[in-house]
Length: 217
Ligand code: ADP
Ligand code: ADP
Image (cartoon, rainbow, N blue to C red; front, top):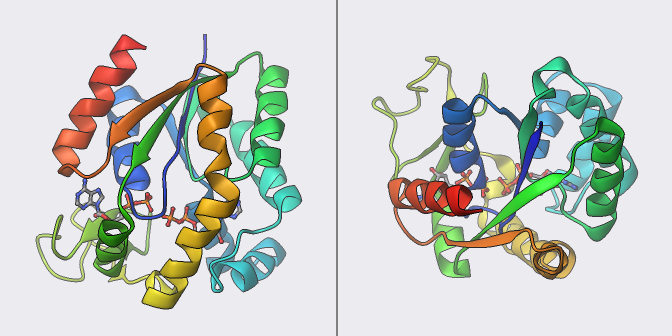
């Protein structure tokens, strides 16, 4: 038995935050496509160089390289029981590729929580996001501040503000989400896998709503 959960929702709605909480509770691996790209950028790989040129503009990295990166990640041993996918798929072609990948694996996408939120709140959350250098722990200077400014509570590493969290790039990322990713809402609804979660509540309330909805599913 495997469990694959896809977290869907606009940039800044809280996918990464909830994925980390849920991964710790369930023991399922957390796969963040954005974190994988940022790791490649840090390690100065060829994929990192390619991805960076798209990420700084708020555009999507091309499907072929993104799909290959996720396939590699899903085939690692820590995903044997399944995973929580955060930020992938982001296009219908990626969603189709994921189905095929999981079939090879003997699994499938089991459930797709779609966390929704208003654009105004997304912009506010992203402008206050601070991310941990070592392993992508996520904070917010207003809504979820670290104990000590600029330092990760979990591993003591430096917190930084992502380059693509500046206002113009955030606007573009939301537009890209609406054009290229939002069609996945009806895709997964048609497959009977979508559960809708109101992302405009506190972090704890969203976690509770997610747990209740996942139990029911
Ligand atoms: P995503 O992965 O969807 O882009 P994140 O989990 O990185 O979103 O959250 C974006 C920012 O909003 C972070 O600074 C995070 O601390 C904050 N945040 C996440 N969920 C909530 C929430 N429910 N209420 C307030 N702030 C939140
Ligand atoms: P957010 O936390 O706002 O949801 P991510 O960290 O998931 O942002 O993604 C940051 C950037 O990485 C995206 O703007 C995009 O350039 C690239 N990226 C991440 N996931 C994908 C994907 N599945 N397909 C294409 N590009 C992606």
